[in-house]
Image (cartoon, rainbow, N blue to C red; front, side):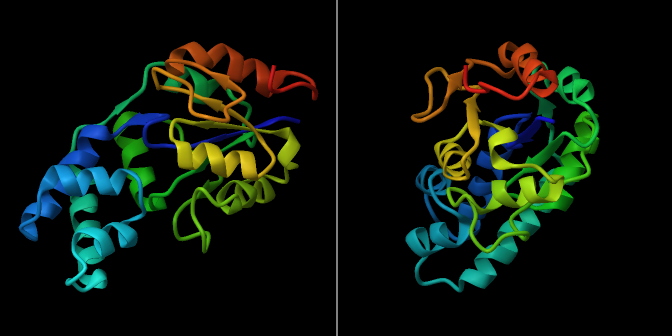
Length: 212
């Protein structure tokens, strides 16, 4: 059996404007430049972002404020699934796919409810592992929970840290929703829609050359 492990934000759900808005509001609360804060947040985890942009602030307070803003955004923000996501997720065999996210499960479930996407039985979130992406731990944890071998897993990602995570886990990694390929991916698709038939073929196909 083959398995597909999906990143969420930027891969299945378009949350860029939401993330930018949340970080802009957070930056405003602390009197910081929103663009600089967002650029930092894109390449680091929240606690690392706080250390760089607000080193004089209590990081626990910073995180609490961020969580409050993110939870409010899940309740009131506008979300959209990328074209092809509903067909793709409904077309995968039950028990053959999982979500691997640097966010938290309750927010992912909230976003999926808002967009009408089906929720799988396995979600590996930021609280499930000690080290997030680009560590291989999140994807390895998902494979374990699915009862899958890494070599039978396809990772679908849009960001360099997630791509590195999947590669370090020994999995096939395909990139989507980017104009150019992220370094290291085995295949690249400009949009999720372009990748849908290939992902479904992978999931239903025999074991073999997944990277082709």
